[in-house]
Each structure stands twice: as structure tokens, then as C-alpha cells.
Length: 262
Picture 1 (tube, one colour):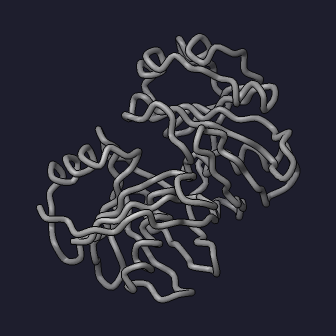
Picture 2 (picture 1 turned 90 degrees about the vertical axis):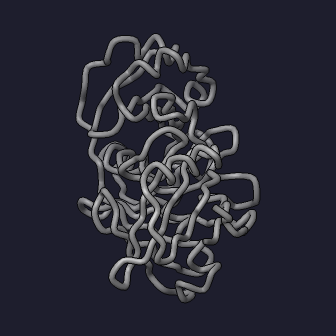
């Protein structure tokens, strides 16, 4: 089995969000084995890709849990199929996942993902959220996965130093923090904290933008965005809202390829 580490939503090596991709081929491995490998890789996500009826099945594991939706590891999985010549240049990979059928289309230097929109509805703050973030939000919303918190400006988002122990007690996958961008060339910025899922701060989170796109569309009066996730590594996403779908496009850079021995 081939194992690759790929920087997703990255314009240069060692930026964006690293994901491990295990190409299972036709092999079967159980959930415990996959979780153990994800813990061994110790990245925000390890993706497992297996052939399924002419398409591919795709599952994502953090070092501690399986998740239902992950953008950067899907981008990395499509890049891995290209690297191994299992996906033709310009082709589209269809992935069967816990969030339904997802596609990844190769288009020049970019890979474009087609994901479901995950609309966040206005919500009261849960106990400890504002204290954990250490800043007063403009608004708070929630969808099935995460809280989405808007801050007053980009500076507040960039300067946050959350209390991860307090965030870990909030019973959601993670907390998306966002604002309008003041940096030229971007529409909005965000950060994503998920200590309860084993990731204090995720470098670049594709699935968070499934909530950010429908959130910012009415506020910015547009449906095409260039977004920046302002983690220490940083990452650029090209985001388009199309009805109840979100298209996420970015580059992926392979850091290493190897052979799994176990």
C-alpha cells in the first residue's frame, strides 16, 4: 500500500494543511487499524482511499476520531490518485463518504472539490465559548458540526490565543472564527479550533468553508470568494457557493511518497 504526505491548499511546500493519504487499493483494513495509523501519522487528518465499484471510498481520521467531512484530505486524496496515475490529468475522482458522494476535479494547477453547503443558523453561545476565545464576537451561529463565530475585524481573528482546555469541553467538532478580510486580495479570513477532535488548531479547513461560504454570501453580496485561513502555516482557498453546494479549489503539493509495511 502506498502512503503519501501532501500539503493541501498550499502554494509552496510546508504551507497549507498536511494530510496523509493511504491508498488501500483493494485491501481491507478495519477501523482500529485505520485509527492506529492516523495516530501514528499524527496529522490533523489521515485519509483512506479504497476502490469501490469503479469509484473510490474515502474515510478520514484525526489522531483520535473518525470525522464525517474533511476538505483538505479530500484534496490530498485526489492529488495522490494523480501522483499514482490512478486519475488521469483533467479527470474527476468520485468519492463515496459519510457525507455522500463528493467529487474532486483536476483543472490545471488546481483541484476543485464539490461539497455540500453546511449552513450555520444563529445560536446562543454555549457556556465557556466566549471566555475560551478571549474576545467578544459580533455574532454566533451553529451547524451540525461546528460553532461559527464572527469577530469585528481580521486583527482580532489573527490575535486570538484560545484556551484549548475550555474549548475541549464544548460538545461540537470545532469552532470556526471569521471576519471580513482587511488584507488585500481576500474576501474573508478564518481560523479553526478543534481540540475536542484532537486538533488544537487546524492549519486549513476545507469543510469549515462549507459553512463560511453561505454565511458570507449575503453579507458580502457575492458567491465567489478568495479566502485565507490565518493559521501559523496559512492557506488560500478559492470558494464558490452554488445553491446548496460549495466548490473549494486549491493546490496540493506532495512532500513524500512511501510504501506501508504493516
